[in-house]
Amino acid sequence: MTTQILEVNDLRVHYIARNRTVKAVDRVSFSLGRSETLGLVGESGCGKSTLGFSILRLVPPPGKIVSGEIVFDGEDLLQKTESDMTKIRGKRLSMIFQDPMTSLNPLMKIGDHIVETIRVHEDVSNEEASKRAEKLLDRLGIPRERLKDYPHQFSGGMRQRIMIGLGLVLNPSLMVADEPTTSLDVIVEAQILELLKELKRDYNLTLILITHNMGVVSELADEIAVMYAGEIVELADTSSLYERPFHPYTMKLLKSIPNIRLTEQHVESIPGSPPDLANPPTGCRFNPRCPHAIERCREQEPPLTKVQKNRYVACIRYEDLLNA
Image 1: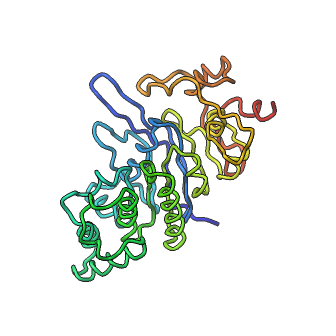
Image 2: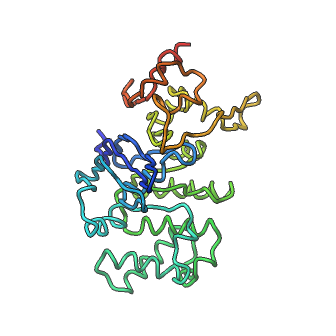
Image 3: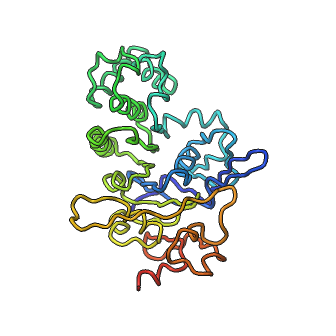
C-alpha cells in the first residue's frame, strides 16, 4: 500500500485587493502517494500555479492562504514559521518554475547557483559542493565545463535542465514542476519529458506536474486532477480519465486535443470564457459553458465526491451523462 506524502485539505487561497477578492483556489482537497506523479491540468487562470506555490508557501502578495491544511510528511506546513519553511524548501520540497531565464540570477554562473543551493542546506566545503555540481551536470547531459557559463549562454532547453537539476540536487521528497515545457519547441519538450521520466525513476521522486497540456500530462502522470475556476472538478488515475472522463469540462478538454493517430477526429473548442474568480457564477462554476447544464446546476454547487475507487467528480449530472 502506497503511503501518503502529501495531503491537502479544504485549501483556500485568495488574492485580496482593495475592492476585489479573487478566490484563486477554493475548497481544494487531494492526497499524493510517495513516488507517484500527480498531473494538475486546466485552462490558464484556473488556479494551478497558485496551488503549486501554496504547497511551498510561496504565494506572492497580495495572495494569501486563508484556510485549510497542507500536510507534508505528517506535518502541517501552514503551522510552520517562515524560518522553518526556509529549511524545508529546496531540501525536502522543491519547485521548477515556468521561466528559467527569469528564475536564474543573470549575474551568477550556473555552478555558483548549484553550489550555493547545496551549501545553504548542508555543511559541506565549496570543493565538495563543486564536485556534486559536476556530477549533477553529467546526469543532466550538460558538459561539466559549462558550470562557468552564465544563464544567457544556454538555450531554453538547457536552462530548463539546469532548473530541474537545482530542484533535484538535494534529493527532495517532493518536487512541484510548474509548466516545465511551456516555452520549448516540441523536440526539446520531448527531451525534457524523457529526462523527467528517467529522474523520477532514478531518484524515486514524487512529482506534481502543473500544465495546460493534456498530452504532456499523459506521458508522466499516475493520476490527474482537473481544475476549473479554482476548484478540482475531477480526480482519477490517468488511464481511466482518458478512457472515460466523467465531468463535462474534462470531456471538452480531451476533445480539444488534436490526435494525429485518428484519421476522423472532430476537434472541439470550449465555448465562452472561464469565469471571473472575484465573482464566480452560482451553482456549478462550469454551468455557463456546459452544454448539459440544467436549472439545478445553476443553483447547487457540487462538492468533489468519491464515485468509484480512487475516482472523484464534482458534477450532479455525471451519471446521466455516462448513461446517455
